Image (cartoon, rainbow over all chains, first blue to last red; front, side, top):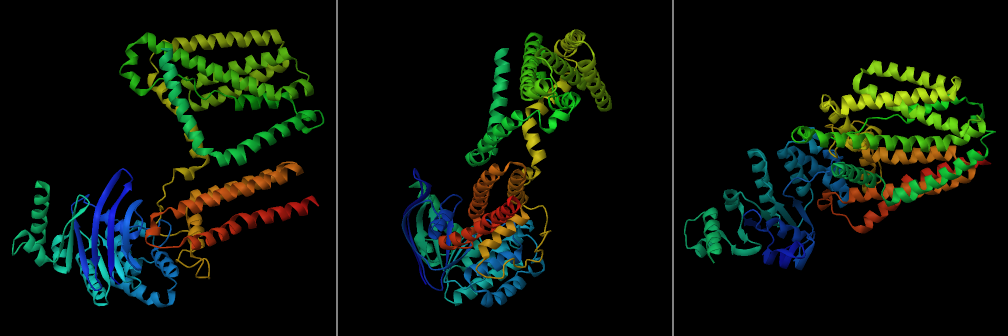
Length: 232
Length: 369
């Protein structure tokens, strides 16, 4: 299923609109990178997509989705397995998801911590819990907010493999990240955001054409576009 | 300097008010404080009307004197000085003395209020049961006031064991004077003792800054008295939301389910949270235990009122716990519908409120019949 976003304006309080005219699509089997400086409006856009933004005017079309938050969100009084079990019960798919849960626990090397509170885990391990919960069920869409944060190189490689698999299965994935070199390698398209508005969107090739730099990296493109925008 | 005293009193008053407001919200006020006051008034009235035939008729005045000395003691002679006063105020002797004097008068006024209230409450016992005159009660007031002031003074100069010894001696002395020595001698003795204590306090603690640090420390403790008391009574309020341990320590240690039914997942999160979070667990149990305890001690007509109050209180407690859990950010990961939450909420109220109260009611009816 395609993610279709058309947000006219959105924010946290009525007087302060954070994002304006955010319009884009993420097609089935596509991984799109949402790029922007700190405070540009990336996380606000994601919250708007999930319907948890207090002030929101616009339309969002998204099916069931897996979500990785910017910072791990864990329940203080649930063990790792209780988080997974709760998720499976909410989804009503215990029988079909139990094997997948063990598979993911094995992939991210957390099978020996099943009965511990994840709030006592290291930052990277907490991020792995978020990955397990997000990838447990097969969703049509995925919203990933800084998924590489705190991950060790092996876990990062496993995450990239999982993303490839999901793409192959036809999932629409929107990923907000500051890891531009990684994004450059794995994303099919990019949406550049600045001051709550879309600055530019397109593939790496089309963005290079926009800034008239043949071999520019994503970082170079981003820098150039930001500078141009600030001069305007 | 009165203005400085008033200013510091205002800060303390506002601090205490905020603390009180955080404990007694409208639900606690409506269901516990107001009904307790009403029930307390009627219980006291019943007690006074039957004082000659009740168990107090067989007690001696000694018990009351010891009890009053224990309950009404002065924790600290207030000075309202602060640590920062060492920098500026200490150089202005006149202002410092005025502030300390104001603190002493404040302590005296508060002590007088407490003693008069306590004696007024016990007056029916003293007058009707023990045939003590009003004049004797006034002498008792002077005796208690001076003894408490003396003990507070002793706290500033002597060690712990010496303080204890002094308290025991003063208690015995007070009882002997009140029961066996002529009134006029008792009054004179305690008046002289009071004047001596006051002049001693003025000389060593008001005109002198020798004990500045000790006075600051004691005053700070008095300032935070209610907070300290609250944390002593309910230590779980101090604890953070994050668990101290790596794994669950009580039941369901191996992440096993509490409920076999798959759709009881909200019930599971609430029950496990209550089991593993002290604040919720003790809060609920405290209300339940208090309610049952009150049901046992009040007369039959009061039992039903207490059960009614307990129902609303427990309901409020459970609703607020569910609300707090419901506001957790985890629900952006676990997506639930409002209908699922409402169904679970109703089941939880039945389990945590209706069922225990039905048990209490059945036991009560059996006992009454």
